[in-house]
Length: 199
Image (cartoon, rainbow, N blue to C red; front, side):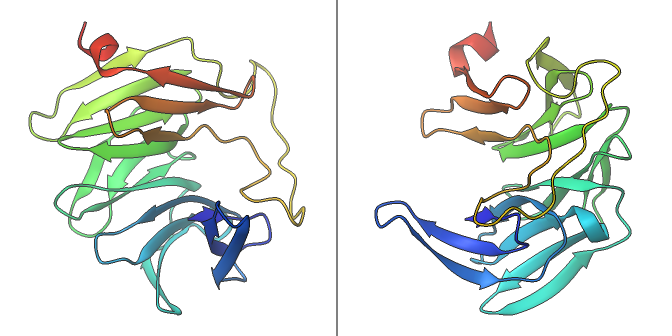
């Protein structure tokens, strides 16, 4: 699944080099995740909302958010959202706020009992344990976010490019548990292997 600078949510088929638009007309889409039900959940920064898209139907899961950027689904089905403008990660519904005191959280990933958060303001990767509530930094001084004193100016609407045209540091996991962080400051992809995280 991808979000585009045209305000579209699409299913990309890499083998064919084609995509199918599932929904369109949104304002600055960022994070995207597929829920266990098959619904596609996206963060719409421009309106401060998190949306669910399922078989052509669009439902608002949360509104009034402060710069929502990343979304993730935990093992128990809870939807999480990173609010970059509020420096926090919160659960949608009755879950409340999980993490506060972040500088600018962007990409988030739920993996087992852990939630990983890319904090572009602090240039860190933070791990939060859903079971114990423990929080620790597992990587720092990452090449993410803007340099000190620089205020990024995102580009709006550049068809046919996918994804937002603003700064974004995302995170994903490989089948072996390796974490991949998109380092927007230098255009690289960083790999953090499970053995390195445990030491």
